Length: 209
Image (tube, rainbow, N blue to C red; front, top):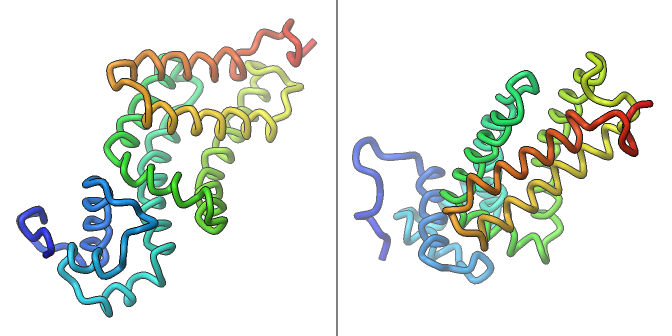
């Protein structure tokens, strides 16, 4: 039976939003996305199966739509930070991203689960992460031009390392780390970005001469 009592009070959401929310509820309740059936999602959302196919091509499309919402929210937070804000601010931005990932940990778990065997989902997830990489390259280029970041840092390489590496570290921390350690984790991640790239000492290997 659909969990009508768990739907939000007030103005009804659209069928698309109902389906997305229902899927996340089922995942939070412990359902494996791989084993989750479309009919089960429809029953939870209180919609007909035909309605599902009006809004989504299939389960893969459904998961990618959930992933898009997650990355859109986290990108809004991350892209608000600029180097002029300093290392403490980047750590705070990471802390906010970790909070979002924890709130939607069930969706994150589903993405990780399906990405191991579905290249479409895996490629889609990394494509979404590409916006973080592009933004990081933009910021680093500005810092290089201002002389605050070593000029000989290879921007595409370092952006790929810190964005994808940071994302994997955050996913791992959300999955297995103690929430009480979130602030410490984000502080260390922020300092790794800041002192390892944005303010890398010029006399270190890879720094400007």
